[in-house]
Length: 396
Image (cartoon, rainbow, N blue to C red; front, side, top):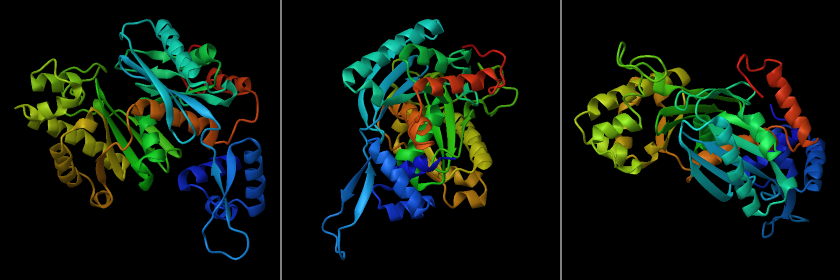
């Protein structure tokens, strides 16, 4: 639950400029409380007043407050399976610059962290943003994270297990860091800044080397979790999956099997899904995808399905089929609001997701940090060392 400063900032982010009276109604904070909080946030440079001109009123024109979006910044780091994208974001998720690199999945993690840290420093140096204005960094990673969002618990795609990325990046960048499952981070960005703002909950599907999903509810912060849709069993007793199971969706519906169905190893990824749809294998692949997706929808009940990654390049006919076929496989009450659409966010969506996680953690959830950066870092690390993640293999 956000504190007073966080609630005021979140209200302004979601609704735009408002008067103090409107903020009191939206947040439920008393008028005196809103006045005190906005005064402090203005002192810190996070808010500014704006007089609304041209509005008919008696006496002084109404004054609203709004966020100074360039007052603070966060780093967004997306570690994909073989690709890294880094960018600097303002408080409204506008990117000031991005850099990218590739890596081999067999590269030692320490080497990868060092190279990504150098890339992040390049982004910071290019931006000319004052170091004191940077709140922290969010890192989107494949695979699950611990409850404290410090450790990559396990990634089937990369083979990482128990890697304390937050500690490592904090040491390298001297910034507080928070981790999140990549598809869940993208879901948060869609829910907070994209078309997902119109829905109470969304399920974000990410198609690439694997297939994953993230679920968020109530503006992306009340409930969020990774959804291992690629490891829903769709063919009991079927072939082996890299997760150790058998008959999972991912060996049928991800980059490699879709490329195999298309019969073209050099096909651009943007054209992959369309080519696979024209193959003889498509009916089976689509059936298995529908089976796993309808299971996830039935269990989670999202109002909106958002298609990201390679799904965002899907032909219109794919969306039309999904909008027709999916509702028939879920509960009647779930069909009423269920929508399917492409992501509304521009690339690199992974960076936007990671930046959104950082903004939620370091600003919108609890307001601006009131103590030294090291206190934030030590508190987070203490939570891990007390066993907050429940894993013996954490390292720091």
